[in-house]
Image (cartoon, rainbow, N blue to C red; front, side, top):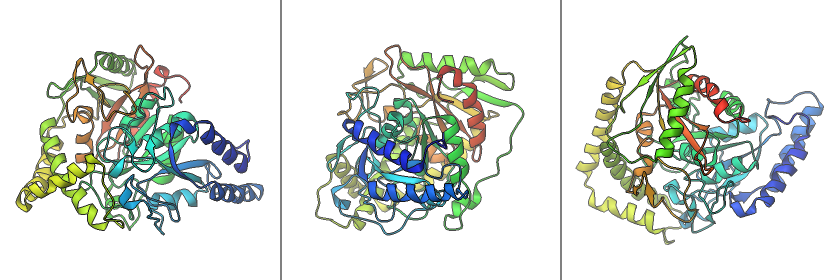
Length: 442
């Protein structure tokens, strides 16, 4: 996947050309063509000297617009940060540069990265490469569209409630929400909900995802959470528990068929034990916590806006305005409840090594809609899309969206694998067993 047979300059030009070819996707909100060409030329000089920095030296990639890249805009999809240009790289960007990766630019995200589709007043709607009438999801929609279209083979995003996994599912690629701290971070926008958000990785193939994870993961003293990630301890046999539903939340029958087919494939693997499971969380409790934490988080973030007079989108304005109705005691109760829920889920996890469930309960919907009209034949209710995802963020556990055979109408679908902290490589091992369901993506 490194394109060793091509010069880095040629790879950069290919990526820039593909970006123009797929301009209708609106995947990028900032392109640094000059910087990419300069970095590619430097890579070619290292290659010619026989001193490449890594296996991805000279390979183009992208960074989501809510992350800091020195000298590039970081707008967070908001008018309030429209002219903000950080002068410092976040740690993941430092590591990419140290590996010789060519940063093509920044990918589009909804305001504050807080929507299930990707649209904002600065840059507009991002569209799904499979069908431009459909959404690639959010909030890492620009990243997923870029990778799915082949502009880049890898992209960096974030995931605070499913923002890596859902877009990966909707565009037929791989999306990893790592263990909290596995990919360290230190510099960036204020957190929207405690430590729920992590740096996430999106890749066209599983091999690419594994390669970049090995390059980007690892401790850094500037991120104390990264010093607490447990070491990976491989097991000869993996126990997988299948979860089909939670709290009676609607799921498309097509999604359940995709899930069952993937589960049957794992069942045939000699080193995997499978069985039925029950979701170890209460989805309504997670939603209540999420609403309080993000309302207060958005209101707090606005204190740092460089252009405070600029308007917010209705969604974020409603969210931040809601913070005024939350007392400090209520917020304190919510933070305390987060700790209680974490203890409860950890204690009731059971003997499974991995939970397997849908990423989201449906496939891609209209690009200009924040959510599908229906899920499982019922009108889509608020929070329906995150029923299987946001609990993972509360726990800080790793989760992987794996593309499998999709809907009968061709729309993509991914299954979700969730493990305890530090077990990303266990998830990769299981994903390898599902490769026959999605040929050509190894």
